[in-house]
Length: 130
Image (cartoon, rainbow, N blue to C red; front, side):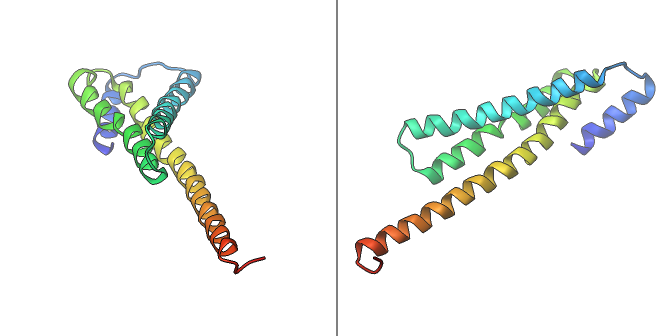
């Protein structure tokens, strides 16, 4: 990411391309949408196959994060002459980090709640709780 940012800075110094803030906002939203769709597809497809919850989480996060390395390869191979082509990659990278932080926290909270409920049910069935 640092290498791409430095290259963009050098190319921008040579000639300032024009772009609008609305274009950047749309690009950020699209990048986040692609990530969330990939994450949901990994989650629901693994659930449909009967995979347990922990592995569904791994599939969802692992699968949704594969497009970042691919986008870097494509940028390096085909889009180096377009300095702003790195902006969606940066949006994707940071959007992915931020979104995944909230999603992982929610999934962890759900796991803790489920474990608590399971312990209560076990204790109740064993006659330890009323």
